[in-house]
Image: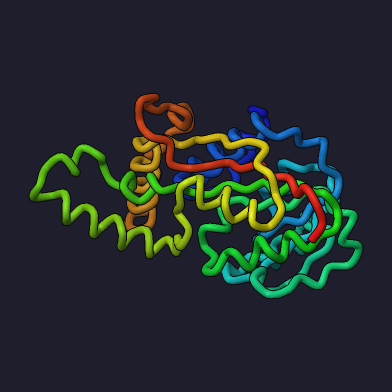
Amino acid sequence: MNKVLNKIWFHYENKSIAYFRMNEIDAILKNVTITKYKNIIDLGSGDGFLTRLIFRTAFILGIDNDEAGDVSLAKKYKRINEFKLQDAKKKWSIKNKDKYDLIFSNSVLEHIKKVEYVIKNASQLNKKHYFIFTVPNNHFIKSLFPISLYHFPILSTLIKKISILRNKQLNHYNANGKNFWIRLFKKNNYTLVKIHEYLTSDQICLWNFSAIIFKFFKINIVKKDKIFNSKSFNKKCCYLFIFKKIKNV
């Protein structure tokens, strides 16, 4: 696991990205049996770096609209076996629907308006596959800036507005509680297997400040040996979900 996390750290010049991704991948590696899955749909595959790093030998079909403009990197470095350039909300035209045993999505679903259409498309696969994804939850927005600031009436309203604006800048449409996702997946014939929470409020605050400082000054304030330091009594701000489809629709 340390080898994988080290690769993530050195891959990103912006260490705020490495900080977030290392916590994500740490959560995945500790809670998912990686070798169990042989044929994977990577929903929002992007440059394919993280998915290929996790699922080293699996066949990967990438679905992405190339909004971030990094699909060419996935093709250049041959990280994705097959690629479909399309909007995930529109009907998927996938051959051999019954061969895929996992749909994987890492920090993507929160960026999709009308995400219910994506889950509906996923449910059309014939096989009783798994759906594993990471998303920020309903504590994320409030945690972008120090929680202690909310204790001051004069600052509370201002910080709340700034946090909402920052979340909009991040294009997060679905920072919801767990019941939102459980109901949505249950409606599409999935059953919940596991929920794991990660990244505490203080970690999200540090990540946000680090991202802002790097954007304007190109300075990294995050240190590698501090990546997993957190105050355990803080609320967790991200979910790792594992669902399984229980019947065909």
